[in-house]
Length: 287
Ligand SMILES: [Zn+2]
Image 1 (cartoon, rainbow, N blue to C red):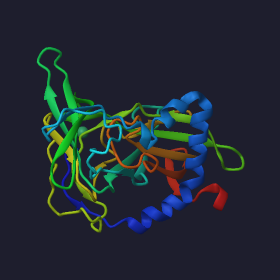
Image 2: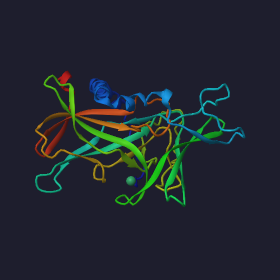
Image 3: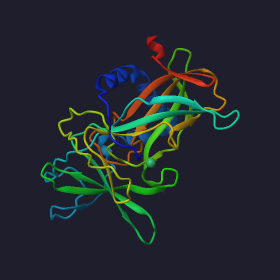
Image 4: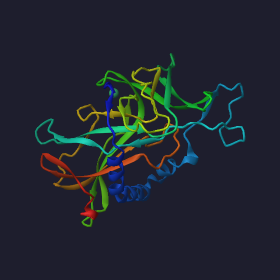
């Protein structure tokens, strides 16, 4: 996005939300499985890295990365999601309601997330490679997706980076059904929010801050916050009954980019929606 550096020390807050949201997350994953999305969930296991290695700078021919004894130890990123904040309900037209939220994806890993775009002049697509670094600075690159022009934000985005869902709850407070979902959202990846300055690989240097079609990324300890007013930061809740719901935000949902842990990418909060007001509430089971 197009913001600038803002500082937040949110470790303790994050842990508290995680403890509270655990039940919803587990049930949500189980429901995904039962709804035939098992292949998506299974694909998030680390054994199914989305990497097809296309280049490496070691002078060796590219391998399939299948764990040979020459495989270098990469310093991988690890994407996580902060609990959505700054929630409010927008009424874009009579009778219509949008639940808007700010969302922050961040990199808790040992290494940086770096993606490099290259325009194919024939197809006009900007194909994106992720560069995986080792400690000595050597790297491999994987084909991971595409940069697309985002007309409302006026810059380039990496595709399929975030997903938001609102779940209804059963009378006993367990997630029941998805009542609203975003499409998979594209993002301009950048360092615009310090989340964990205690990450061993953190430095104050903002390495990624443009939204170009050639280089984007997220450094270790840094996050990328999308403010609630931005296009795409909403779920349609027109016609939704008043009540308590579960709001789920997932980073790298497919997954597209390579990271060290695909099981910690989801943030969950509970919200009470009453007409045009929304408040964050504790998980119903713990009330
Ligand atoms: Zn943007």
